[in-house]
Image (tube, one colour):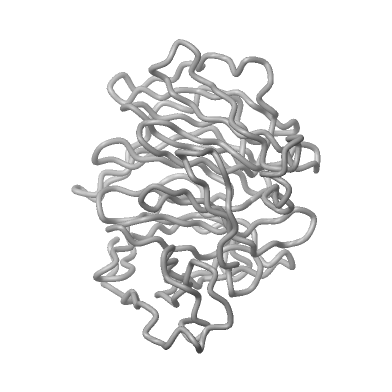
Length: 337
């Protein structure tokens, strides 16, 4: 059942004098509205138009620990609760949107690892069961949609995986995607983001070791998987000498205009560093660190040109419900959160 509007988003620009700023690093974090009901980590999220949809995950405060609730966020009106997810509540599910529909599947709880898959119709407020995911049941995989098809891949179920499966919404069917040239590292807890009909997959870990390779996927090419520069200092030149803490797992990433941004996560210890990726030059540069409590398993999204990051886990079985807006071209102001 839909719930009425509970929270209103906060969006603000830094209005203080530059002399008051502790640094001039680009990227300001501004407090926004928290998600409703439960704090959570490892939630699922997708974007349709100007709305972001967030739900599921793990919450130590929820009655069942793995809540099935789902919420929609609009930058003008805040958070509204939607119909509950029809399957079992779960953590580490994957999600994407195609056209006017959102899709959610896979994930796990304390007893089960899932391969079921569902479509959400925001116009009718209806969840519909779809064909089960084509690969092995898994959690902490990545999901994305490019060129009219959906994809879920990587993740873990006893063993870490690197396969990807394609979903055709017209046929409600799954098929294995072409290979990865044999060099795509197995990983779980990675991030994926989409820019100009290409999907980018980076970070994650395998057997407790952070991976360093970075790839993009373009299904229109004869060779759809293509490797980009590593995210640690492996080049004999000096341009990547500062790549000291990009590697991590259970981070979150979003695209704003012509840049992608990676923040939070863990690399043995929780990290708050934020990095910007320049698509044109295949280079990373540091931005203002996330100013709140360090966390992993957060979610992030961009709606109406505005980017938000929130939820997550402290690493001590404590989850968060807070959200912040990130303004990539504004200097940091500590008074804004």
